[in-house]
Length: 610
Image (cartoon, rainbow, N blue to C red):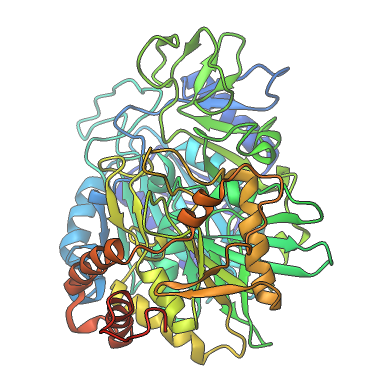
């Protein structure tokens, strides 16, 4: 297929696009420029095809609803592969495939996969174009839904393509929904509103920085700049080049004394990252601004500090649970120019999901397109329903959001969804113990990935599904960062989700989490007290500001308690889980596990919290 009139003369790009077109056999190739006119043309095309439903322009201007196939609603971790040259470099927590065998399989499924469709060439930059921490990529796709979503989620279009000059590295990413409209014999079939394939691949080749995704049109399976590039491939790049690519939000916090702090925080998906990223403090004088809600790239700066950017340009957030009471900033951000996926449709042409309001409407059309009432007995919105919106619309976005050099990180937070054991907040004694904190994160499974909701799973650094190489080596890489920085961030763990014996949440969460952020910032400036426990430094009983808050003293004591018996059980679980890494697991972290056990169950006369 010829590529006359292409907007680049870069032969590396042209050769790759030609080869991909020969394999996939699209009817035409379209180079995307990221313009509003292109967006308008593609959304109109998808409305005609039934992929998008335009929302009421008076209630939700410029916005659309997409409904995916019921089989295509979340990440497909079981079909996500790391094809490193050696199995041991992928590690036991990744699905490894032998690279050449996988390439052969992919060539088979991609052969003719775009017949009858258009192949879109989508150049993009992760981070500001030309920035010192940014990286470039090109995705080819047969999904216009992916094109318009990539326009929101990345710096997509002509400026990114212009930056990919001869010799400039870029990550090539090939995506197909896997539903050709013409078969090999030339027979045509009708399209559907959400094309996909029951057979799915999300494949990564870390050494060559390549991504292939087949069969899914949804989220991180299809928007390949997100988890595939920004985490799985970028984590390998970061290991090789001495930086960090992390599943983290980034906050700018300003105290009443106008001191500015920058925090990065890692939480598994659907555990409140976006709510924290858009936190509205309930305590006077504090201000929180948003730099990122999901991914952080952190590189040692010339000043010896760890500097972070949000490589994304938009938010792909979980809708259920986002409401006026939990995240009013997000609700304001979602007033216009949003693509919603798998939420419910109101009778007047707006959207709704569980948690948006206290009461559900009397009637809705649910995420499958069926009539729904509060008595239906099923969720109106899918639990992993999403919104895709530009970060520029976020009322709390910080001016540093577009700063190419990033911001200096003062503290790193690790958290998960834990009913018990993990205190409300704890501070690591040093960088090494902080890495141990990150390595020991466990969280109750949510609807953002396959599996049983509520099941406790280990998710170190909230990166279990996203590290593109052996996690034991990943832990060692984190330990090595102390040799690359002259000022190390402090490290904390947090847990908003602890429950009492009666099952109720002990902490009110949401905006009240600013009280925990306050204690963290006061620790950074040296003005907050803490007490030693076996798992780190936790606030003294009077350390957390609960003025005006209805949290009984007994609940606060429970929130900050460390139960040695329960934690000894946790140590046993961690030891068994870490055993899978064998000799590659860092001895330094094994030492922390032994020390934790000693502190929890010291010999007679030992110091429990030494």
